[in-house]
Length: 223
Length: 122
Image: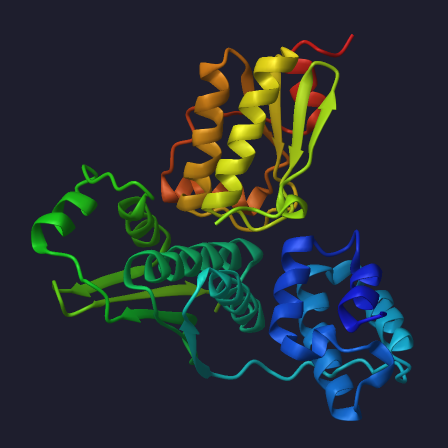
């Protein structure tokens, strides 16, 4: 069966990595596995706007060509080039419940950073930090949320990230050994928190045994 | 949980080296499966090096770093060298800022450079 995933995947092959493609299709949910010919107009719209966003982000040099091929494959008229809206402030809370959500959160953080005009390097830093935080939630608390807040004011643009969970929390002694660099966990948790602290411009952790953990960090970029 | 055969990463033999191109999200089971089959092939096929191609990997966090480093360590215990190739500039800069150590894995710009360092190119 020619599904959205197989058809669009074949077009993106070689331009967008398999990892990224999987996150794109995961975000489309059930639509990704529906047959290409049976999409409703609304579903086609959903697919097109997701592709617009991801293809521009991950294959900027070839985006026009790729988007046109995708539109043709879906039997839709090629979308008129989108007038890029000026970046606006936004806030989103992403549920983190399983390992799958880590890649999704990472991609969301990345595209949010690019959307508000941060450099490619900053965007990768942001994505890496979110990856660490989401991973800690999945490994140690089971579930939680990652909040992405884009703030644009006259002085700066910044991305505020808050990762919160109701997990076991971390006691003072362990926290000291994590940030003192002496803590070694089997899956490397201590390193993750320290990494986020080093990557972020501001970093704050609020945790208590039995009360969960809340990590807030800020990335600044561009004037 | 056992991995399905199609989930395992393909390992390619090139000269007396093994090449793995990482194009999928690494997780515990997958990493363990990869490590095990690499070990087995290093032992039975007498390879000199293992090359991990990460040119498709857009983000490497500390967990992925640990997985790569563990693979490097076990390859070294078997007497072969482990190289990571194709690391993206933004990823490299991020790893530097994070202060992570990848001490069991050598790096090379690309596959040719790794083969050259392993002395496999004439």
